[in-house]
Image 1 (cartoon, helix red, strand yellow):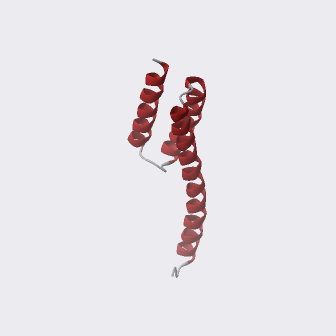
Image 2 (cartoon, one colour):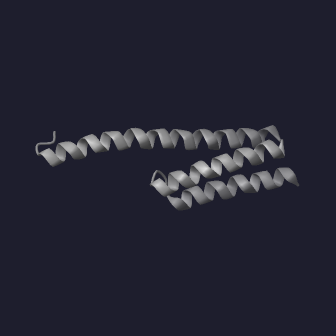
Image 3 (cartoon, one colour):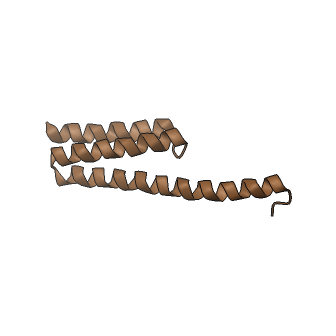
Length: 88
């Protein structure tokens, strides 16, 4: 348990940040899941819209430090590749 005033404040801030990060991570994962489901549905237009939403959430998460930027870029690249294959 925190003893000093500053340590108590840091503990409170950590709890708040944890909640915010959890929410952001959930939004990101949901967007990715929706994009993957759209790709499975084989409709390129719907999949492209889902990809745009997922890309936005992934880059926000990377910018906020929720996930590594290379991981976000890799996910976006792989989703894009799958959608491009759908269109062909």
